[in-house]
View (cartoon, rainbow, N blue to C red):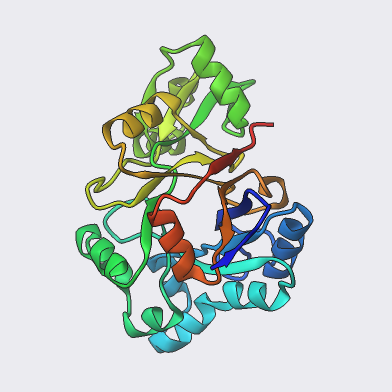
Length: 287
């Protein structure tokens, strides 16, 4: 690790997507590198979506070729980077849940040698990742989105600051599971959304096996329930607390990150730094 003499901290975004792999990504790896370099970040972790839907979309080709395609965003970002450190990560989702996990510290070789890990139960996948040097951090463990019927149309593009204001001013706003809300929406039951409500899509999974939780997520299309986050942190104080931008588009850039007192030379050293409690601060932009 590159120790520093007089700079107290360096900023790293642990949750960055590219349009080369993530279907919801809107920014090329090269442009993402440029944006984060201009924002003054020290490094980013490319965490493109690692789940069955993506790999199935590649068709009937050998696993090695699928991994080549998956690594395209990371490899292009690394090639484009000059000053910025670029690390390999995954946003992992298995076939059992809709929850996502940032996995940092695995090697490219691991991905080639372990086909279709997204088919493993979480209680098998997490120890496998950790035994190969990775940390497992649950992304946005209590993610919600607000819906409200306005002028005959169900609006759901509220910004996080609007959703936070709703909770502060109306703490009794109801929460429903995402599937119930989507079923109602697709059936045309707009009366269900006549008053503001939140639909929840994520739940804390296997806290006894996790290394950490993402307590701040800068994606501007979603929100994390502060009361649930506070309870998670209270109940599981050993979990590493991280902040990330969840970068998919330009407006998400540099909205979150962690501060470290040194610059890890590779993803394994970054995982070791996170695991050892080296985080000195969190970057959380609510603008």
